[in-house]
Length: 404
Image (cartoon, one colour):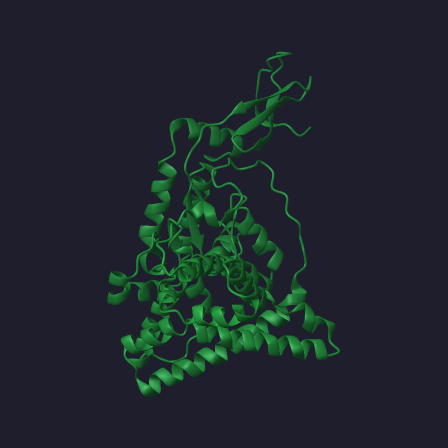
């Protein structure tokens, strides 16, 4: 009943009913649909690439797969070919496209959240990126350790498996179980956050357009603002918490985010564990936040450079009308670029990364693709699919219908 074709001769009853029951890890369970004899067969190992797709790419691939792209929509040929090559490389076990918390937040406010969430899960390989704030916090802790010991800023390692939930190199399951949870209660809060961020970014951009700062001026400000930005965010979170607790609206409490306060308390506890008197811990944390060594924290540094590049363009005459969505793109690049093999991002972000100082002074692993280099991305996906061994191709076709 649950066995999947193609069927071969059962080792026990000899009937041509021995099919695939399940795939887990590096083994496939085969079972006879007649006599129920079963056994596991070991599958070959591989080393899958990890590619981040921004929400625009995810939605375009979803619409392509479901046949929901409107007639005459731009880049239809590209997205159709992109889906075909990505799907083939994915089924041939050469790549995964993990989801992230940035996708989750964007999906909640999308018009068809459950469908889009499922579409991304089906390309994720049962893996998810750790939350961007958790990755940044882990970097912060390593820098705090160096600060406490009086050392120089640490040289971090960037193993992608360290920021993934799930096993990157598992074979894909033949069944995908998804829980259709309703997160719509959080949508109003997320939309308000986006609106506030957009207003703040617009004000910042208008300031750039008026005062015309240089790239270096913006960069110095952004790099040195690690501590002040943290304290300002904490004050904002405390104010929101107090307002929510004082209100008669239960939903306002549900929308609260306590991550930053927890992060601050954990830092203080860490300082106490390293010998700082409890009464001095928060003061020492504040000093650490202003430590110049924090300018080398990868997520903070890359984000600061992107802001400086954007600010310099606005200062040089580009329209100051920039959407808040670009901040999510900056966060994704700043967090995942050191770990992932490739990223498909917004055209403007890709262009900023090509700016001279960003090219020469930033170091990260990911190859950057966008709508500006469509053919290069297609070539990359094809290369991934073509890299599968003959054995893996044959098994992928048998288990998932990769060639159909």
